[in-house]
Amino acid sequence: MKKTLAALALTGVACGASAQSSVTIYGTLDAGVSRRTDTDVTAVGKRDNNKLGFRGVEDLGSGLKALFQLEIRYEPDTGAIENTVRPLFQGQSRVGLQGDFGTLRFGRALSAFQETSTAFEPWSGMPAVAGYQTDLQVAGYTSDPLSVAGNSLNRFSNAVFYNSPVIGNIFQLNITVASKEANNNPAIIGRGTAAAPQFPANSMAPVNPYSVSATVTQGPFAAYGAYERNAVSTKLWSVGASYKPINDLKLMATYQRQDQDYSVPVNPITKAWMVGANWNVGLGLVRAGIGRKTPDNIFNSPNIAKTKQFSLGYDYNLSPRTYVYVDGTRRKATAAATFNYYSVGIHHNF
Image (tube, rainbow, N blue to C red):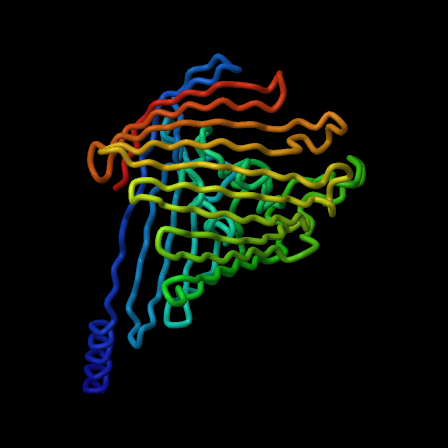
């Protein structure tokens, strides 16, 4: 009996030794002072999401790896967890396998479209007021309309995520499919009425949300195409491209079309475009963009507002992990909803 136990123990040690694993703790601290002219309020805010993350990889042998990633998000000015209605691991909560077949994960994260499009936006998808990814680059679209009010709008929960290998160092396919769970959603009026909303609170989704994106990279040129359908059958088409005429300059542009015909009674189509650039100058990075979205208010026909935005930002690198920044933007939807926004801050990765 003792010999058997000893043999089993040695086998366990040998198996443990053959499987190499690592866990990384990482995060972001971003805080600054901002001012909006329409509110006349100066406040401590953020340009990027503040996060504390845990990422692990275990080598299972024969080219197979186990992966996990968890991200907690918090507010820089108070230290509180980001928005109390959001889950603890708001940023990401996934586990999966990676091999010659690609990467397969389960949990919560950015959808295929939302994750792909951030590489084609001047602020790299950061939720800065000066940035474009949270509104114009998605044509006002919401990936998760059945989530509790106040939750993040660009992620799928209860989902399966697949990323293909990069074929020929050029092409990659990304697919996300979510379940029809209600996710504690509020009532959505849509084509219904307040007494009989089209999507009652905590009702199951009528369809499975899914998202597909494909990227092509060839030398200084890159492009993507994406299609997504959310839980209330709103559809989004998006295309984008970037080009680097020189190593220090990246030009980019995107176009989006949102179709809310299933749930919105009037003006269901929203279109948007954005043109931007990143320019490395010495230790600094210049960010610039201009874009427009129409219609802005789908319930305000025939006086449909067009959101117009111009933004300019600058980062100065103090080290490979720390930079200071300044952003400025002018955003105009209507005469009553026009503002200038300015912010200065510091961003640190650890």
